[in-house]
Length: 46
Image 1 (tube, one colour):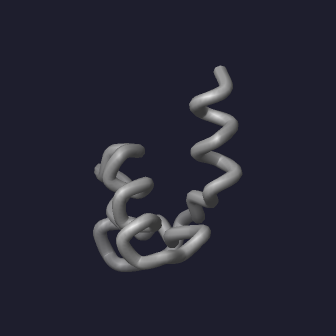
Image 2 (tube, one colour):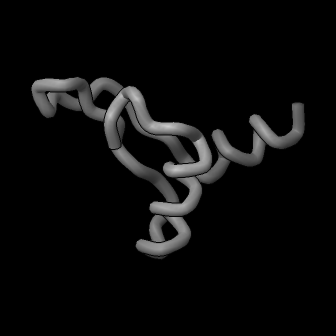
Image 3 (tube, helix red, strand yellow):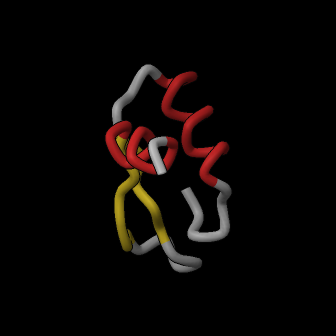
């Protein structure tokens, strides 16, 4: 996913793909981070 993607986009991609995490990449395609299901739960719990 792009660094410009929204959190909801990450959640939808994870659900559609049946995965627990997605990689975040910069404009050059270099990995810069990861979003996990636990990250999404923590965000919702705020």
